Length: 158
Ligand SMILES: Cc1cc2nc3c(=O)[nH]c(=O)nc-3n(C[C@H](O)[C@H](O)[C@H](O)COP(=O)(O)O)c2cc1C
Image (tube, rainbow, N blue to C red):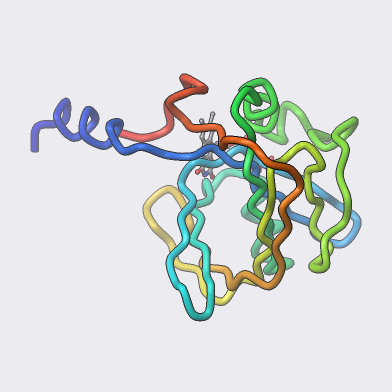
């Protein structure tokens, strides 16, 4: 395989940019993600790919719930904040306005909207784990245009 071509083509994939939020008991956390997609209409389902080294992965395995918060155009800084590892930034949610969703996960007040999901299955996928969640709650917080990976100028793919 032409590795340069593989990288280039995979980086041409257009993506949105989200904060996936998680909770386990009294701990709350969130991480920036672009490997997020709806994957079923009925029931409505969303798939996310989660880094094997992340703290969020452990919390997801323990709790089986997550929310996908849709960031707005202009929220690059917020995406940058949530892309920091919990090892270096153990309390990323500090100072972040949020409410508690029906599943118990934090919902970012600054997001355009969110879906809350209960994990129905997961499977290892190389250095990530795929989680498929059924959407059990959703909310529109305000109108606006969603942030994209391209607008933010970040790179996560290849
Ligand atoms: C632009 C961008 C997109 C990212 N997309 C994902 C993703 O789809 N899945 C993932 O697990 N991590 C993704 N990350 C990395 C996580 O945000 C990062 O590993 C985070 O530190 C994990 O946090 P945690 O240790 O608190 O769980 C992305 C990072 C950036 C900068």
